[in-house]
Length: 397
Image (cartoon, rainbow, N blue to C red; front, side, top):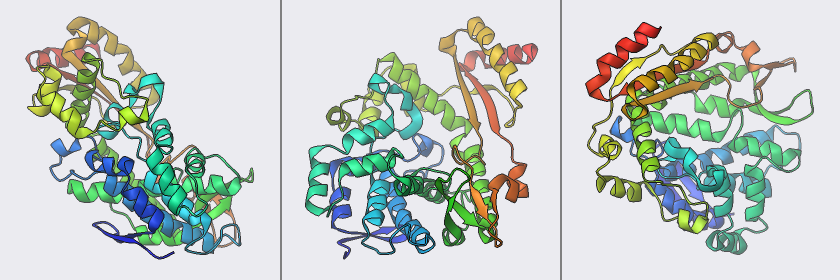
C-alpha cells in the first residue's frame, strides 16, 4: 500500500503513513496528543522536554513496522512477510493508537480517573468513537477497532499475543522509542542505546510453556544490556528526578483539592488536555497550583539513597505515619520511587545462543544479573519547617 503522508521525525527520520494511518493521525483522539506532554511536568525541570505523546506514538508506529519486519523474516512462516500484511498493518495501527487514553500530564495523575478505570481502558473506549470507527471502515481493508483493542489487551490467538508484545512487553517499541526521544528532548545522553543492532537481533521465541515472545539472538545481548542501562539511568536521572516528582505531587494534591476526576466518558474526556488544566491552575489561589505555575514547590527535607533493601524500605515506610502525624499531612509531600529497571515486563526476555539454547536475559548477561532495584523515598515539606522535618526523620532513623 502506497504511503499517503510523510512526516519528519527528529528520532527516526521520515515516518510514512498509509491511508488508514493518515486518517487516524488526523483524527481528534490522536491530534489531542499534541497537547499532552510526553513527560508530564518534566519540561519545568528540563526545558527541552516539550515533546508530546503525539510524536511518541508516531515513533512507536514506525518502530512497530520495523520490528514486525524483522520478526516476520525469522518466524518461519508464523508471520507473513509483506508490507501490506494484515498483521503488520494491525500492529502499526495499534502502536499509533496505544496512548490516546492518556490523561493530562500523562502519568502524573493516572489514578484520578472516574470509575477506577485507567488510561488503557480509556484508550479502548476512544477506539470506538464514530470518527475512529469511520476511519477503519473507509481505509481499514478488513482491519477493525475491535482487533486493535484485542491486541492492546494481549488477547487473541498465539500470533495476536506475540504482536501484542511488540506494543507492550519485554522488548517493546514503546520503550525503544521513549528512551531515545526523552533523552534527546531532555538534553541528556542517558537514554542512548544501539537501536539498529537491537532491531536486527530480535527474534520470535517459544518459551517452555509454548507461548511466543520476543527475544534476542546471542549477538544482541550487549545491545539489550545497553537498552537496560539506558532505562536505568533515565529512571534515576529523569523520570525519578526530585523536582519533577514534587511537581507531580503538587499537581495531584491540587486536583484532589478541587475534586477533579478524569471523565470515564470518552467524549467528555476528549475536552481535557495539558492546556486546559494549566489554564485552570493559573486561575487558582491554591498553594499547590502556585507551586507548579509559580515554582513555589516544597523543598526536599529528607531523601533516602537510591537502592534500599526490602527491609530498609519497609522500615522507612513505617516511620512515615509518625512524621505525618507530627507535622500534619498538609505540610508534607512524600514520594516513593521504585522500579526494577532490568525487569522489562512480567515475563523474562529469552536469549537464543548459536547452538539453539535458550537462556533468560538475567543469566546470559553478567551485568544485568547484578543490577538491583531502584527504591527511594523523598519527603518534601513546607520550607518553614524543612529543617525540623529533616531532624525528626534523622532522629527516628
